[in-house]
Every structure is written in structure tokens, then in C-alpha cells.
Length: 281
Image (cartoon, rainbow, N blue to C red; front, side):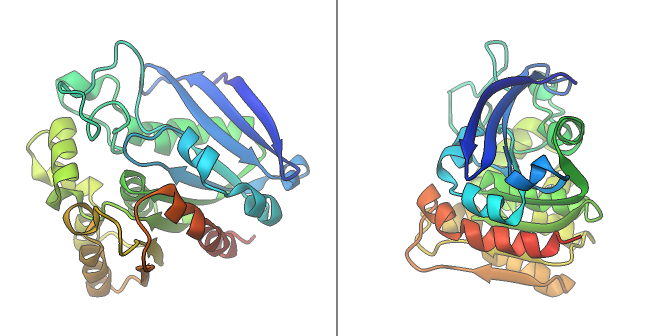
């Protein structure tokens, strides 16, 4: 599991790195970023995973997430993977749409023939990349948490619900809460997984909860000025599912905030402090 260092940059007495490696899961080179706090020089530190949304790479949160100062103070490693395989031979959407294919892996392992070879983002994020992080960085893999935005919020919630023993905390910014019921998700899940809606349920936070998945508590922020709030995100469905299942959910709808990184960076510290409190030894 060899990794190539693309760049190393000093920040808040820690190190922001960008790395590349040949992925066995996607069959492509994959790029990811890791912030190592100063404390990682002396002991393994807990890991916060950040999954990005549609059209994004590792670079969006790395450049605009404003997380490094607090991660340095709290002793948190933050890992940001890419959102899909990439390369000249990787198939994308036939019409080059932004919401399917390149930049839109939806954190699933595709089963449809055209995409099954490369689009294995579930296994990449839950198996291959964690093993790489554990081997190559000063990471305490017994203390992990996960968060994400939009499509990445969907990924964070579904991964946490299916791996409740691995993650001590899970939160999301503007997640696609019920992809089986909204246009973004229906397009992606049918394209990657086919028409069997039973297979979709394993990648739908609301459906997972309805089917018995549980997590100790969740934190979700969705701006009330988010243009995707009503049609694509539908946080009320998650709120109802958590209430019915007895899962404590803190769902906040901050006034005037949209879907952008201006919103994410405004509440990033809240989420990191919430994660840090649950990542204590």
C-alpha cells in the first residue's frame, strides 16, 4: 500500500498533506488529503473522516473548510477522500451531467456493468483507504468519526449506520437524507445499482433506520435558505425516522444559510467540537 506525496504544507503547527495512490478498488489513481495536528508527532490521534458532495474532490474542503486551526488545537486528524474514481477510461454520465458519474460516486459499489469496475467508492472509503491511513499515518483507528456534506452527508450517515461499532460520532451538513425518494438519489442509485429498490435501501439513511439500523446520536445542520432543501435534501424525513426509532437527532436549520462552503465553514467548528467530545480516550 504505497502512497505518493503530492504536497506538504505547514499550517497551525501541523501538516496539511495531499497524497495519491493506485487503488485496487477503483482501478485508478486516487487522491486524498490528510491534516495531521501537531500532537500526531508524538502519539496516535483520532481520525475524523470528511466526505464531500457532488462535483467535489478532496480539494474543496481542504481549501475552504476552515478546519485546521481547531483540528490542531483538539488533536484531530482530518481525512478527505475524493468523491469518485477519475481517469480517461472511467465512464461518466452520457450527457456529462454533474449529478452522476465523475465527481458523483454516491459512496456505493456499483453493480451495473458499465460502472461496476471503477465505481467502488463504498469499499474504497470503508475498507481500502482506512487501511492505508492506519498503516501510513499516526492515526488511532480505535477512535474514528465521520461527517460529510450533501452527497457526502448521505455517505457519512449511511456508513455510520452500517458501522456503528467503528464510528464514535457522525454528523452531516445538508445531507441527502433519503436518496431513494429524491431526484439526485433516484438517478444515482438506479444508475449504479439497477432497478432493485431493495438494494437501494442499504444506501439510504432513512430506509436503513426504518429497517433497524441504529446509531447513538446524530448531528445535522441544513441552512433554511438552501436551494435544494425541499426537493433533494428533505431533512424532515430523517427527523421523522429518528423520532420513530428513538435515535437522538440534533437537527438545526440556521437562518439564511445556503448549500455552499460559506455555510459549512461557519459551522465546521461546532461539528468538530461535537466530534472531539465523543472521541476522547
